Length: 458
Image (cartoon, rainbow, N blue to C red; front, side, top):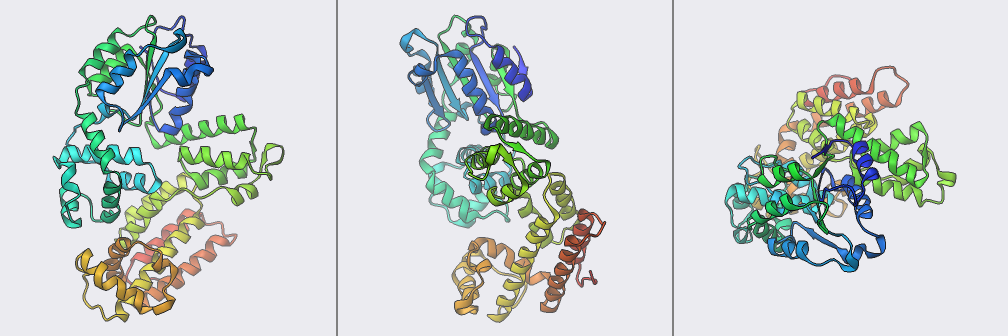
């Protein structure tokens, strides 16, 4: 059976698809949800009349897709003698029980961005790998939770714990569903053909190719593989989705407007859809023409993950890692001024923490446990400024400040911080000037001078 590895190939297949002549009734859509959802809907429209689709389509997700529930939906009689569809988003039977550790940065970013389904799937994999029972999670304190789930120090464990508590029922349901008996589904897939009145649609961000069900689907169904194979492939996929959606909405972008748009949204497919919809509904988008000024007014900035990683690298004085992240950001079209501003905010926060710690008489290089910081040091830091606590500190999560505090103590003394803040001002002028020096080189020079003990003149 075919495996379609591009958006163009997927759209071409769906356009030519006929429920009368095509025997395929099992479809797996691999890739980001925002990329595959339009394809799922387009194929559903080919299979059944739109007015009866709501009666003949059963929807499940990782939490609700139990073996019994899916089996009943597949065997149910369709109304109006039409084809029936069962759609499962993030199927629990694709959750791998691999012992390989998950990427905690990706999980934490999923929590921050509100991608609850992806975060829960990753947490389930980690729970299975660590053999921790879900019920035990609620009884664990922060340090034991971090140790049991092997959460890296740089991750905000408090936020992870809050996410677990808020979604505990869903996590339990997904774990039960993923460990249920799905062996019968392979036989159903093998027997599905054009004579079947039921079609199975599966959407997954990623699948372990060693899973038996995946091998069966690949042999007896159609795989729409939109999972990017490289950063360049991901970029091209997002640009293709952008072009298709903009054309559908009747939006015409100038070259500068398109570049600024991607500077703001990066490779976030969901953000592409949301921001294009915002532009289309804007009264200023006259005749569909989109200018850079309009993008600047309306489109929000979404690219945060790697900027966070950049700050961490600078805080750890890892110049090589910081420069590699800058290169990656520049390749994605992030403007040097955005990077400079991010570094400036981070360094200012370090400086304010350094001043406050010195002001409250905290001595030594260590901060101690998070509990000590939260209960004693953090209130004292806020009290140091009394009513004038800077917003950049007041609005930060205590755990994030806890992680930064030890870096603030080791990063330099007050004189060193002042020199580096002045240095940032100098580099900011370089970036704003008409200098022919590439912005990437200016940022690299700035980073290397920031992380050394005593910066040179910029």
